[in-house]
Length: 301
Image (cartoon, rainbow, N blue to C red; front, side, top):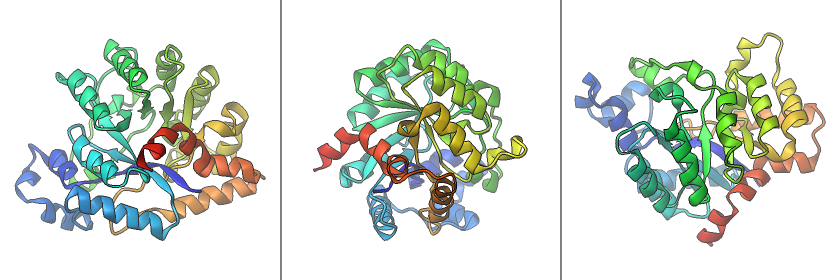
């Protein structure tokens, strides 16, 4: 099977939230999509169906869909309810927001299963008490925590000319490990192999058996590590974290591009190149994700 642990659900509501309080807000979704070269997403139901069809076309069994702006949880909740056996709901969340506790509970009650933290974007530290509250809530709801560490760039913001005053220093995998080690029953995911903090991500995974690494995107952060290759990254990740804690992802997001098969092909080729056996590849490309979110699949059947 193939399960993609990292897809963004760029809904109409996401675009509304992204351009709120900017001159683009008055132009409307279709004008924004035309500028981006995207197809308009339509309602969450039709976008969910489009993603299900896209996964079928590429023989992808399951995928995580990320609500990619705080306040867009409903869109992904609609998609999950429409295709419960195919999608697992993730949602971007700002634990420092005034209504954080209530919003977090509502998202979990809507069957979203992974809370996504972006400390560099929202300006808090991973040792802040609000992050501890997120882990405690995830433990109560048998949910997971995803935390973006390292380099953070948002392509859609750049294309629209929106400022991105992110503080990359706040996304430290070691600070995340200091929190995750206190919640050993909460699966914790670091995307993009730490996005430039590869050494620190490996150290975090070595300290915390509940930390997983997602392999998503083209991993362009490797430019910060001269001589590093995708093959080397996989080999070292296996050596430290083992094959049970790597989650394949593409970072797919918008149409007409759709699901990024080239990411899958390059990662498959890298694993073949280093001699990863069939069992290891099965775990990375779907088995580990399916195990983490087995109860979600059961609910959908």
